[in-house]
Figure 1 (cartoon, rainbow, N blue to C red):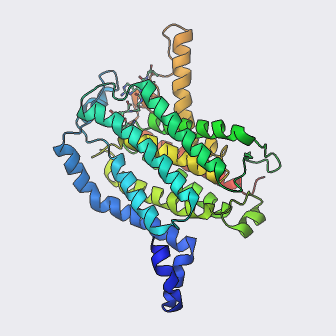
Figure 2 (spheres, rainbow, N blue to C red):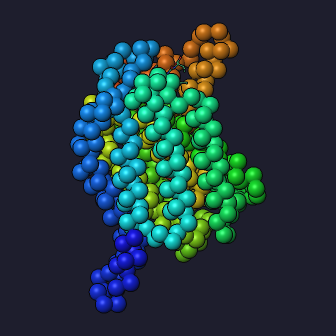
Length: 359
Ligand code: 57M
């Protein structure tokens, strides 16, 4: 919005020329989202407490978690508000990718909000029934995938990390592939959100990583030099990623151990969907397996645990899945699990960035 209102005046006020630069708008997009979270955080925590939107803690979880009962949840609403306001302020509103990523992020946020509301406010322990929740996710992901597919000149090839000459063209099959990326990432982040700061840390790291990939993909000369696919218009997604990281840092201020607020499915489902959509737009789909490797590891730990449990009629691979609970039950304190998982996430992000040269 600022771009449209202020940049045209650069002929009279030359300083306004700065609004044309994605780098400038990225920095202030991130800072705006961070500031909104800082300013609204205490207020929203008080409001959620007044509304008694407190987390219900399941008995079968780690004993340490029982003292968390009543912690305000649905904090994802704070993240989504900050990201949306900052994105609308700092991006070019004529950019289709901006509206597509906002649609998907807010669509999944609404699904999570309904689930949180039914569970925490209406005290329906199961919340949104699993089938309705999954069907809603598939529907939002389908609409998003069709929107991306229909963007003029959007390529339906997929990029394989480390192999620049392998770029299979999926054609119409890109739509189901894109749906899988969005729904899979959304649910992987959801599973990961089980300790204070555990999910939001890697989300910040992944958003920061894709911020760089979006800038490269949207810059014709840099994309050519690094031999990555140029995606016209994807540069504006750099600003969205910065807003995501900024809002995530603002939320982490309150979600750090001992958490004053949880993000809820409102946050976890939407943040995962946002990362999945960004991966599609920047043509770095498979790279998400590396950038979001921690989410993949957490989801695989559940898949292996449940599969092994069923195959062996009751035996477990881990003390408890997802993996973070296994280390908790091994005696690691919550902050230690969290920081060590962040270290893994940062390492994976650096490996992902190295693919820009190792190809
Ligand atoms: C999402 N939700 C947290 C909070 C957060 C199939 C099975 C693996 C499903 C899985 C499950 O229920 N996943 C749901 C994880 C929950 O966090 C809430 O949910 C939102 C995210 N969706 O924002 O509102 C609990 O996590 C803790 N928490 C924090 N700090 C945070 O910042 O401490 C969350 C955020 C919160 C709080 O205690 O209540 C969750 O863990 O449910 N199930 C599990 O993950 C369960 N694992 C399990 O059953 N393992 C089995 C089988 C099924 C694999 C096994 O290993 O044999 C664990 N989670 C719970 N109880 N709650 C263990 C049992």
